[in-house]
Length: 374
Image 1 (cartoon, rainbow, N blue to C red):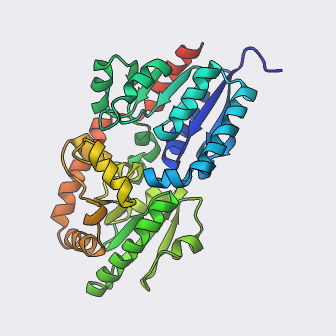
Image 2 (cartoon, helix red, strand yellow):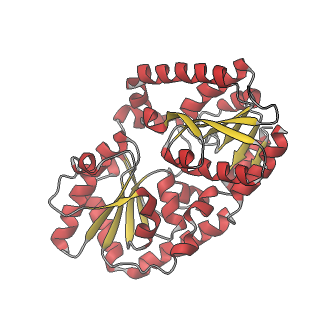
């Protein structure tokens, strides 16, 4: 029988970035000394923080609208199992992290069962699907934001929100890596944590590498490996004879700090590189149908968080048809030859670091959340 003094918190993450950031808030919640038990859906980072992960994020590795439709039977089965677990576990509260297309279903379940929901890293309704605001008002008790520019939007629409800063500042801890020397011609590669991202981007990255080495044999390529992928799997998409060096996910920040520049999939990863001060080329490619729908309904000037935070293009964004090995090689080669250009980008990265604030966002979340549930 559950001790009446213990509060059971269900954490629900759908992808690696959410797993990394949620692990920080779980760590901070434990440090409050409150009598808490954690269970839910996550990855290795949450598991390492003592969360009883009944479901792994690897079960939900899709991207784009058409890709989700293909995986729908599997997703529906997963949702059914999660509902059964929620009923059996009877958590006192649920924290959902990012991944709105999946987590909105979890929120609906929680509402019917009678479990209060808190949203950490809310959906970007200021960019598209503004109608989701009504759902959030009705079904989420409080939102915790990590992006300074979105708070006004939510407040103007009468949604309870608190800006806590960004946990990635603490996760990345750039001061730890500031003395690592940048290695000339070393290129970091971050093709994403989803299979669809890797299969779409890595062949293009390999062709880019081939072109760059033809003009300068000194270039070296270091791929940050998401933990769920084997080297064998990743090499199957590397269509080049250029040597590829692998870096385990837990060593990624030190490795990236030593890179001259990075080529990465759009997402949390490019905010990590911004916090590390690494010039980055942002890439993104999905099925044409998914991209078309995105263009119709997304109303933001940029797709990457560093550019959105700055309000201007710091990192070049090569999306869909604009993404090619030739264009990647051209930009990377130009940056390599002109250190002054890289220094200008690093200045922009420092502004982003200042905008995101200090390293206690997870602590702010924990203090506020404990007041909410006691």
